[in-house]
Length: 77
Image 1 (cartoon, rainbow, N blue to C red):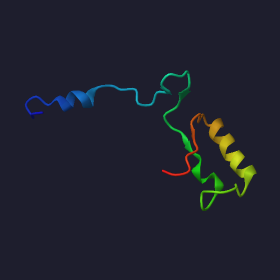
Image 2 (cartoon, helix red, strand yellow; image 1 turned 180 degrees about the vertical axis):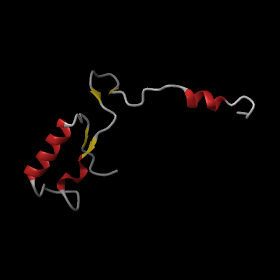
Image 3 (tube, rainbow, N blue to C red; image 1 turned 90 degrees about the vertical axis):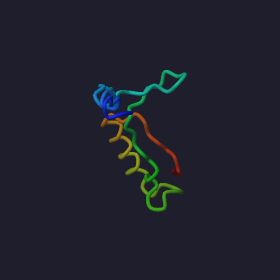
């Protein structure tokens, strides 16, 4: 791209809906782009049994109350 005909300016000026929902391919499941990473719910060390089940459930309920509908349960990244 040259400075005389900078196509990148067109890309930067396009309006895009980056905050919209995302439908998983070949499903009717729609999630929001911001999820909750639940990896730390088990506490320090990340794996094993929950140290405080009631607190973990309370955190998940609050996330849902706040509109989160994508809970990432990966145990490593």
